[in-house]
Structures are given as structure tokens and as C-alpha cells.
Amino acid sequence: MEQVAIQKSNGAKPRVSALNRPRTRLILILIIAAGFLDVIDFSIVQVALPTIRTELVVSLAESQWIIGAYGLTLAGFLLLSGRAGDIYGQKKLFVFGIVLFTVASFTGGLAPSFLSLIVSRAIQGVGAAISTATAFAILVTTFPEGRERNRALGIFVAALSAGFAAGSISGGVLTAVFGWRSVLFVNVPIGIVAAVLSRKFLVNHPGRALDKHLDLPGALAVTSGLVLFVYALTNAATDGFVSVQTILPLGLSVVVLAGFVAIEYRSQSPLMPLAFLRRGTVFTANVLALLLTASAGGVVFILTTFLQQVSGYSALVAGLEFVPAAMIFFFVGGFGSSRLVNRFGLKLVLVTSMTLITLGSALLTQITVTSGYVGVLPGMLVWSLGASIGFPALNIAALAGTKQGEEGLASGIIGTSQRVGFPLGLAILLTIATVTDPPPAGTASQLGSLTGVVTGFQYAFLASTIISGIGLLIALRVKNPRMMTEQPFFS
Image (spheres, one colour):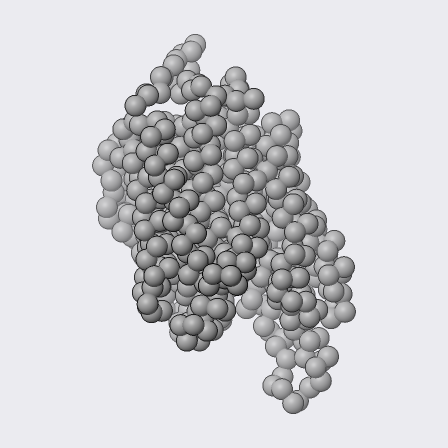
């Protein structure tokens, strides 16, 4: 297998030399395939949920664990997967993650019961965590810091944006024509092809981390702590923050994660060196990622609910009404954000992103019962424009200054921040949105009930505005990292 040559120039730190252009294109395609499997699986299964619930005879609350089980293990294993790739080799774990995800998709499609489906979904989450964390790290090692990495990240984000939209559409078609099991089976041929090509064409090298010891106590603590934390947030979205189902796992997660910090402080070979967070823009990028995905988690869910339950649009029509936002993510975020970073620097792009997100959320606070699609469209588009340039820029910031052997660590941390932010924002905004729940049926008019619902949505969008405003203040403190410039790997 071809090895990557290491060069030194003018006393600079070692860097990876350029592979031939077709090879780098293929590597980028394989990286995109891993991320595409994760994103399309999330959206495609959501569309099939009502059918799954009917066939397996489960309640609405129980059916949420079809999504929740996947999200729990995915968030919990990202950091461990990224660091393990640094130690044992990214390629090995990348292929293993794809194979595990593919097998779990197949068993999920064959699941004879709700419990077996949940188990398969949880294993899918582990496979997705391994493949996505190592995929991001492979991207970092393949494309050196600067314009080429920024461009590759932009293409990566564009493909994932397209995958989310494709999953929503194909999920409806597959479920209607072939049944819900087909939305899981569709991952199998994609996964097989991706695993075979990855094994053949990805660069094979041993782990790049200087310290080959895996911090098992730290790995156990952070994984269990994150799983408990996301579990608590999942319960909070339906039961509220004051329920026992939320308070107990939330308290346990705080204790376990505090233990993780103590373990890392004392460990000779920490899973996540605390000093790493203080380097460059790493800490700021992860805080901003948490805030941005927190805003996204609640805003998208509430807009979907508003369009269907208040404005009366069908699920299909409501889905199509998000196409303009998806196009912004695809074109502006995917192909524009990296160019903006290259030209104007990270700080200006992040400040602009958080300003637009804050403004978009503020516009959405003005919705009324009669607003309809036209009423929410301006706020939706402004918010989407800000978020579309923000996500790629945050990934660039989180990876800036990464040293050899830290690629998986950096990708695992930023991935975890994004995955935790989504349920965190959803739980917070839904809790706020329910403070004006309408009275029981029969005690108020339908219009009065809808007014109460929309008032709660207004409060939730106000909370999103505040969260984004905090992100703007943090973005103003970002310092532009010094980036290397390289000759392009591909034209």
C-alpha cells in the first residue's frame, strides 16, 4: 500500500506531501460517503417513524428511541473513536466503523421486534461514531491546513447538506413503495462499496499519536457521561427539565463527567489532554459549535411543527418548504464558506455567521397564528444563511493548528460538541415553548389554543436569539489562526 511521504521545509513541522489528484479526489469521496451514511440515515428514518410505529405497535414516546438510541451511542463514542484512530490507525477504524454500521443496518431491517430494532440502531450509532470521527481525521491528514483543507471541508458540508435533503425525500418514497425496512437496507450496498474501496485505496499507516497508550478509565468515564447527558436531554425534550427521568441521569452525568476531568488531569496519557483545549481556536470553536447546533436543534423542530400543526401544511409540503434553506446550505455553505474564510479570515466569517443567526431568530419571534409560510420565510432564510457559513468555518477553526497524531482528537471533540448541542437546544427551546400550553380541549376556542401554542414558539425563538447573541459575543473574541498555504491537490 502506498505510504505518505513526510517532508520538512525550512525547519517547519513535518507535513504530508501531496498525493496524486485522482487519489485525493477518491479519498474525499470515501470520506463523504461515511458522513453521507450518517446524515441520510438520520433523516430517512425520521420519515419512516410513523410507519414503523404502526407496524411494530409502539407508542409515540417509545418510537422516539428509534432515533434516540442512535443519537446516544453516536454522541457517546465520538471522542473515544477519534482518539483511538490516532493511536491504532485511522484507516483500520474507519473501515471497521463502516462495516459495523452496514451490518447493523442489515439486522435492523430484519428486526422482528421493537427491542431488536433499538439494539441495531444503537450499534449503528457506534459504527457511525467510529467512521465519522476517523473520516474527519483522514481529511485532516490528507489535506494540509490552509486553502485546500478549507475547500475540502466546504465540499464535505455541501454533500452532507444534500444528503439530509435526499434522506427526507427518499425516505418517503422508499417507505411508500417498499416498506420501512427498505430505509435501513438501502445503507447496505452503499456501506459495502465504501468499505471495499476504503480498504483498497485509503493510505495505510500506523497510528500517528506519539503516545500509544489508550486511557481506558478516561474513555469509560467520558463515554458513559456523554451517554447519560444525552439521555437526560432526550427525556427533557418530552418530560421537561424538572422530571425525575431528566434530573437523575443529568445529575449522574455531571458527576461522571467531573470524574473524567479529574482522571484527565492526573493521567500520564490522557484521552483528551486538557492543554489541547487551550490551543489556538479549539476551545472557542467548540463552544460556538455547541451554541450553533443548540439553536439549530430547536429552531428546525419548532418551524416544522409550526408549519404543520398551526399553518396546516401536510408533512410533504412542509418538507418541500425547507428546500430554499437546504439550497442555501448546499451552495453558500458548501462552496462559499471556505472561500470567505480564505479571503477574510475566520473571525469575520464567524462574527457574520452569528450575527445573521441572531437576526434570523429575532425575525422568527414575530410569527403569529396567521403568518403561514410567507411569514416565517424571511427569518428562516436569514438564519440558514448564517448557519450555512458558520458550520464549515467552525470545523476549520476546530482543526486549526492540529499537530500530527491529534487529528482524531480534534475531530472527536468538535463532533461531540455538535452532537450534544442539538439535543441540548431542542430540550431548552421545547421546555420554553410549552410554558404557554393551551388549556384542555373544551375550555378554549381553537384559535385561542393556537395562539397559546404560537406564543410559546415566540418565547422559544427569543431564547434562540439570546443563545445566538451569546455566540456573537464569543465570536468577537476569536483570533484568526495562522494557516499554512499549500499547492492545490486537485483543481
